[in-house]
Length: 538
Image 1 (cartoon, rainbow, N blue to C red):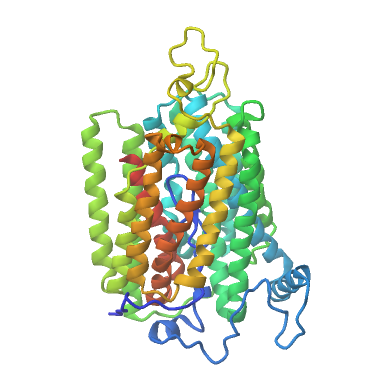
Image 2: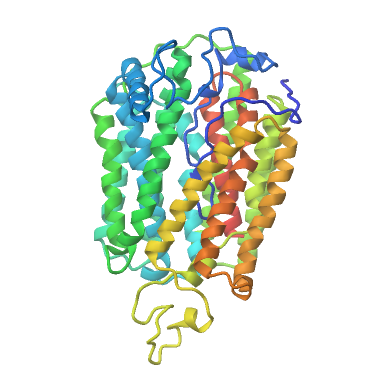
């Protein structure tokens, strides 16, 4: 059994932990899942090596976007020339088509697609379907199931190739086509019931959540063949995601506003983002090829693989069962709560015992990141209170006639935040999530993991109390404007959350067994999403 002391942190390049959304689920858990860029040399070499010394052939560390094209090349003064050199390295090694596909998958399909879908989804539940905040939270959790079961996509692509013996490109084509169909249906079909809308939103979320897993698999393979370009590939994925997501969040508020396209019209734009995956994958830009027969594995590796795959399957089953109960069961709420609690605790117990033979530290980290979200209740009620639906007789209207439900936000002295400002808040949250990653790598990566866990979540607890301060209107008593206060919350919470969660993925990279890197890391990316989903259900 591999056992590493979690009290000792190391300075290693780490991927951004990516996801979700910036609302109830960590956006971060929705990002690239490749482990290979964290490794110097082969997977066996890293797992076996306990020190922090890089191999002899490892390149000097540095920022991929600022390094010169070749060792010994004269320093370039202008950033754009360094950026050109960066893309030149990737084009020469992998071809422009593969680089473009990675950028489109993470930048357009995921970065822009998330911004459009998640924002429109919130307004659609409350303003179009007229759901209560509690019901909207339940359906939001149900629609996000595809983000919670990402490890299953890796398992399917590894074990079940589709046409032509290809393991990845066909899945991307199916996801893209499904996304186009689901977005078109949400846009064009007058849906009066929440049930078909919820099912279509599950398909739309799946079309965004699954393609990055396929790309991550190819990134892992290419990083193994070109270890000196591993950091460049990670920078390509994360740079595309954050740059496009920030820009999209700045503009989506104007699209989702009633004076613009509205929520349904914004769903229609998601069809365009799905085409950004469908067309390049169908054109063969991924470079997918049938795999040769694999040699027989070591029995220990087969056992590790079964354990990881079993945990992924159990997470998928629990996510689907709980999400379906929360969305469709109409019986006593105590039954739903009991089943949710029982399955959540059962999954935590399974993760601990199934992963413990691989690594005690890995099993503890998996349970920890799952329970952090599951034990933290979340709700859509704050958004329902402060968002301006833009209607004449809406929650923020000052001209209500005799409608008792009209103008209640004004009556309670709640702020009325228009869609454009809300989307700008989300963009700020995205940006400061990236700031958290930079701060971790610069100042906290050599801290003890336990210190980061404990200190980070203690600070995160205090940061989350800002929501309570807003509900109690404490900020108004102190003379702090609501808009400024909400913007400050979007700056503080993502930074602290990212720093607190980063050590988990570093630890996973160090103890991950061979042959299951992508599936295990996708499992760890899905667990905080699932935990946060349970927090929404609570």
